[in-house]
Amino acid sequence: MENIRCWKKVIVSGLILLILVGVSRPGTAGISEPINQVRDSVNEVLRLLNDPDLATDEMRGERRRMIMEIVDKRFDFREMSRRTLARHWKEIGSGEKEMFVEKYSTLIKNTYVRKLNNYSGEPVVFEKQVIKEPRSAVFTHFIRNNEKNAIIYKLIKSETGWLVYDMVIEGVSVVKNYRSQFDSVIKNEKISGLLKRLDKRIKP
Image (cartoon, rainbow, N blue to C red):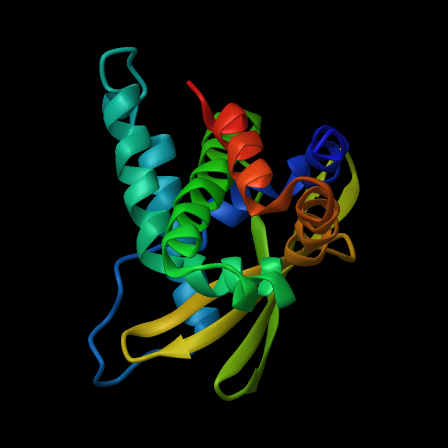
C-alpha cells in the first residue's frame, strides 16, 4: 500500500481527465459512440469547474457533490473492482465484494476530486476511438508544461451507455497497478487486511 503514494505521482496529470469522463447516462435507445460521450462529459465537468457561482467557499461542497455524481454514473466500479482483484474476486464472499467495491471506489473518487485544483484550463484533444464491442477505447491527451499527457479510457458497453472500467495513463494501467499492490497485501493479510488498509486511506 505504501506504493500508492508513488502511484499518485504517476496519475496526477490524469486525475482531472479521469473525472471528466462522467456524464448523465443516456437511455438505452440510440446510445452515442464512446468518444462522443467522453467529449460531452468534458464539457459538462468544465462547466462546473468554470461556474463562478460554484467556486465560492460556500458552494465548493456542492460542486464536489455534483462531480462525484457524474463519476458514479459513468464509471463501472464493480467491473473495475473485479478486474483489479482478478483471481481473488472469485475467492471472496459477496459481502466482502460489496465492501471492497465501496471502499475502492471511494478511494479513487476522493483522490481525483482532491486533485481538481490542478486543472488549469488545458484543452483536451480527442484523438480517436477503437470499438470492439462490448469494449472500446478512447484516446485523448492534453498539453501541460509543453509535454503531452496521454490518457486512454477503456470502456465497456452496458444497456445505459459506455462505462469506464480502466484508464491507461502514460502507458500505465490504473487497474493493473492497483492489482499488483492489492495482490501483495491479500497474500500477506487476506482480504480483511486489505479492507482495513483501504479504510485508513479513505478516512476523512
